[in-house]
Length: 300
Image (cartoon, rainbow, N blue to C red; front, side, top):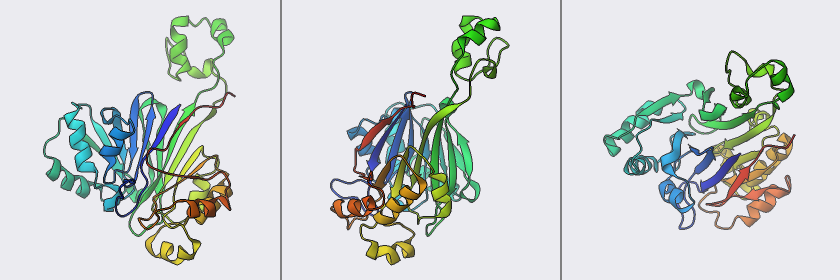
């Protein structure tokens, strides 16, 4: 299962009850953070996201509302006694950004492993068989959207294991899709079952690739900077989407859940934008700081 929490849902500048862009995923006691806008470390404490557990941090791009929280967050992790390495990934330009941040934080008790997605594309393996697929967003600067995938192995067949003479001491390892005792998982596992997929697509216009990557995802967290479709020309100018566009894309892609996020600071009431999204996708939900869900595998 995956616990998903919005730590910040704002754009450009923080508001009293709205921090800037950040999404937290927690799986098997390990944490993944997408973006780190101003206020992220405060929101993490407020909403129970343990920075000590953070293994991987993905930056969509290098505008301040997506990374100004990073120096303080890294120092907070150091204060918690973190010593394990942390991976920080993003589109081209990452090295210059992290060099500048290192000048602010000073020495840290943990190593930062850098991973640049060349041309905004690529994959990154995560602990526990999960993976990130990065692909380009359509924004004013190089920007990535991120698809998180947690696969699920096929059902374990104990009868096949017994027939092959596999000792029970190896069963759990094989169920985890790892070889053991000279045996391989394909000998005892059925066809892979549906896993979990979460797509974080902020600071982007709707694109055909985004629709394709969003097909049947369990959760789409989508840029909804502008509440009114009358602001579509402004959205095109700055590389964003309207709430209505987010709803339309979710409907076209057949997503299972849609959370609107990355609201303009001018959007103080999410209801009009939510109504615009629901005109296309009735199940759309307005994101807010602290909104959380635990996604679980289907029974089948």
